[in-house]
Image (cartoon, rainbow, N blue to C red; front, side, top):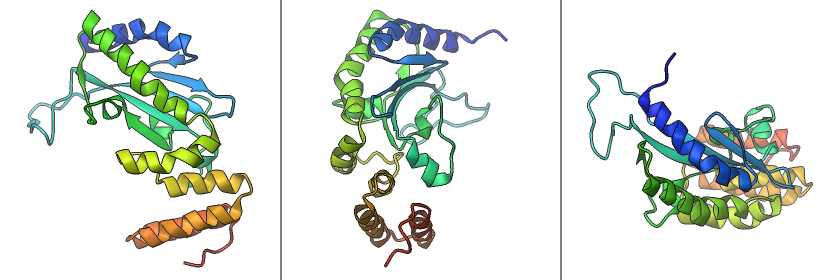
Amino acid sequence: MEKTEFAKQVDEIQSQLAPFLKENGFRKRSRTFNRTSSDGIISVINFQMGAFDPPGTTSIPGLRENLYGSFTINLGVYVPEVPEYQDGSEVKSYVQDYDCCIRARLGALGQERQDIWWPAKVSGKLIDDLRNRLVMDALPFLQQFETREAIIRDWPDYYNKYQFGSSSPPNITLAIILANQGRTEEARSLLEQQIRQSQHEGHKAYVRSLAIRLGLEALST
């Protein structure tokens, strides 16, 4: 099947940025780049194309945009044990951004602090802008969370500052990491805190079951 002009443009944008990403340790599969740190943490950069809206779909600016012909860049940090305990997922050999417990959009890390979808039209200006954003925003964000200790130390404050809603709650992520390190009391404390902060009984039940799967015994809350 012949590619659309939209897909060809995104292919070319990726192609022009691929050497830079390769220089920084990333390998490519389709529209996703992975890099593995010495601590086994996988950094993810993904090019997402805007979906095609069916005929008759009404675009509503600010609410339901027509994103076909535009693309965005997703970032993620994958800690293998987190999805394994969160939902029973098998450890991935190649990771997509939606597999990650820490997630962000490139635009949200820039000075705009908002989601950005770029028109998929290759130009020197666009490539320069994206490369600069990768250097200034994406790589520092991903490098900040290349070890479990850095995630434990920095992720809660970062999450609270930027409110990355697609990421896993920091208490959940950190509790799983800590429990796997044998730091069970710290893990229990975070899960109990998560229950106290939640208003949803279903989520509270999930957190209690997670504690059992982590070998922490029943929580006191």
